[in-house]
Length: 106
Image 1 (cartoon, one colour):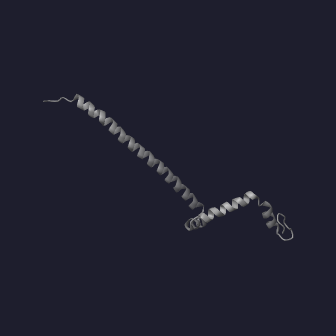
Image 2 (spheres, rainbow, N blue to C red):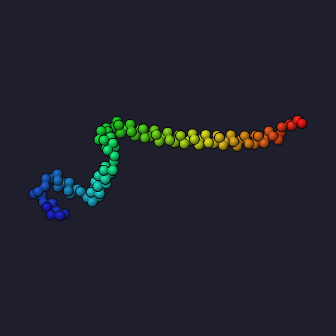
Image 3 (cartoon, rainbow, N blue to C red):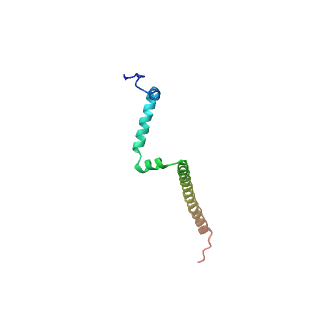
């Protein structure tokens, strides 16, 4: 088989269809997918090999839940800090007000 040309006598119709449809972009995509797979940990590869649609759906739901929990946690932390700031902000003028209007007996 010469470079860039297919010798029809040597390949099956399936092989010919594969080679004809193999564009530069598809080759780049295959290399990228192979690199991504090679970068995965053995545990991740094992999980993906065994995963079915239910496990993938459960993983997606868990990730969404953890994301929402993080957002709620930040909101609660900001709320607590705001309440603490309000408490300090109100107590100082209240103290000054009390000291000004307190009747001092000598």
